[in-house]
Image 1: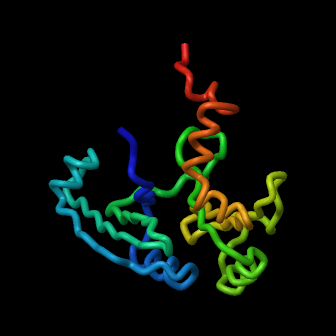
Image 2 (image 1 turned 60 degrees about the vertical axis):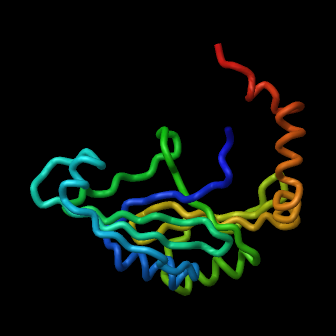
Length: 173
């Protein structure tokens, strides 16, 4: 058994409408679905306690097909700072072209950019920004590797799994 593809990532947001507007205005990602979750389901499915529980769920589609699922819970807890060395999700990423243009675009929209565009030792470029809730967003320009990964990614995975990355697939003690 193996997965067909990556489906989506989910984040909890402080404001559903603000998240929809942010991801549309900044990245051109439209809202493609909305659901209001009844209090009983919020209690049983999410394991939350309380009497006036609500959750609005939305699906925002990025170009290329990935989906960002957004949750707005009421009542909600305050956000915690993201620590890179805490186990768990740290950021989401968009594959883009013209990284400096994207940096300028985000700055013009008032988006907090955590870093300036930089080139990695392997040739791709990237920088980090934050959404209005502080969620980290990486913008990455893979350069020519976009095409290599798109067309040769499955073959590369097959080769690396049997060669230089074999040790990662072997059973742990």
